[in-house]
Image (cartoon, rainbow, N blue to C red; front, side):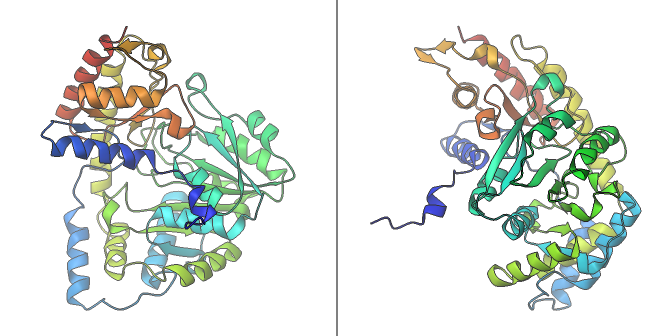
Length: 397
């Protein structure tokens, strides 16, 4: 008799968290491990946001919040969307959740039925396919390699759409690659979706504020598909608030209502204190966002330059987020101490054990020839880590 559900048994563990756990185990043994596996800003939450949370505690915001979030926060999100993205939403179209991960899962569970197809550009964030599995849908992968800057083309998208296609998940700026779609590239993808009236776009824009090309471009800006776009965003990356667990969607009313109903049955409203902190994030001084972005851009340039000095790595120049995704195919088949490197996951494990640098193999992201480094760490850590990586890779023959 199987004690666990087939739904659970179908899921794969998160490779990013698995690598973080392995690095923590090595640290506990006394090794100096530099963790570049988890996508988390190394900055502290800005002081004015923390003060708002303290005030919320003092003001006794200790009761259940509305299922879809406090009205003042939803209004502030609408104002942010108008101010920064020139998009019109009402508070009723906003659903605040316990992190953008829950927001994504809410949307997928609300619109995907058994055997519905969801197009996922590859490389992809590790949780997208697992969420589709939970909804009993089918993931359809469209691969874009480093030669096309990890971005799919309109032709690829068109060829992937079938009568069973229900949604496209588009992440820009991207985890794991850091690639950013330009306005023209998004317009071309939107033109394809426009022809297919039953297809939604789930636009994961959690890295919106960490881009190095200027203004963020949302695919929701194209009016002919606006009513089929669900924006997923939150405060975790841009405001260094990962642990506060606040994400949200801006969606067509039908989907917003569906997600509210779903959330009402399995978590109810998100943390009241965290929502008040998020309100301060969106309505307060925004200089902290620019300061962190400037630091990330400097680190991006640093790590790209250092990685390009390592023979055998193919490195593009990511335009957003805080990841770099070098191709490491030339090291597959090489060995050290009698152990052969067969996969990118093997490369990552070798670098953890030999260099004490934690990264993640691209196999988990649908890109078996790459590895992901998060550069959400100090300049000194980046320099030390990549020097170790270079030394370790030189040992492979």
